[in-house]
Length: 436
Image (tube, rainbow, N blue to C red; front, side):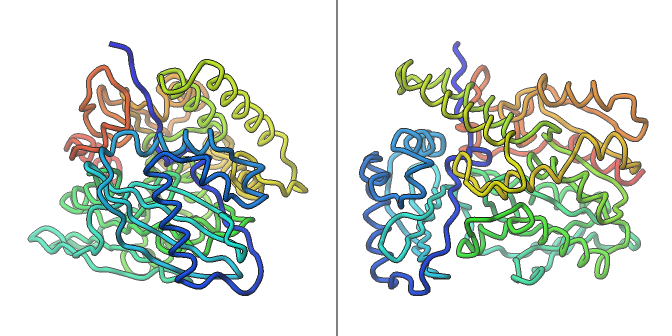
């Protein structure tokens, strides 16, 4: 059977277009919601030309109708038939009106966030899978207790999970992959961070997990956004909270881009150890290029000519990312130059090789089609395998979420539509690493 591959919005660059500051007066709620309703209907009806035709001049230079279609297909390909649009939310800042809509489909929901300048032009657009639960109820069992917390300057929502009937336990801070997600890292029907938090608590390890800032407050997006604005400052605030209120023995567990960030986080905050789940020490732009190539190869809705055009544009974008300097200001691949430059601060290979001495556990699933066994995991082993503080472990048949591959022979985000679970042995390996 030929593999079909579609990539998720977690790392799809053209999905995440950041809003730009404009005039002081934003569109009214009535005006912005009316525009968003029209644009959402165009998206679900696949009228991408109409939506692209309403892009602001700045956005139109970065993304055309074909790229928008590719972005939408990468998220909406497996969600089924459209049902309705609900949960509309309006915010405004610096002349930009931001409307967030949950589009309900047969299998999943998609959060569609649209921002408009004061002329009614689309200044930003991004998509994410919608969490199934809008309100989290902290869990209280015989083995652990949870409480809701607010973290940092922007009061980011989070959950602290602590073991019961035990004292002097360590605590882990969980860091999501790229894209805007809730504190459970909800993807489709799955909540990997909730499972990790509960599973580790049952083994005597506390945790804290928080929303991504722009998931909770998309209006805070701006056209010079960096990883510090997006999540790093909030993660550092969560670490401060953990050290003050939970335990001085703090570890970080990062998933995907969160794993890329974990060595830098540990170094800056004097943490006790690092767990990298589906991480890489390559540049994010290189991963995006590989994912685009794999996805396009399997997509039969594009002609060969269209595929070549998209890949050329992506390769040109990757080359432009690598050529960025501190003086660069123009967005690349729909993402601010400042964001790409801030990613260089993660410096994973150098930190792991030369600066970080604490224990590091690197985990990878062999069925992961978003971060690669050969180009990422095996490359890390070749570069870092002689470091005594770094342990590598791969799991046969587990996907990007460290859950069993549910579609044998197929690599597709349809994997995430059905409820699945992290095997107990993965949680046990992480707990054993920390408890050692």
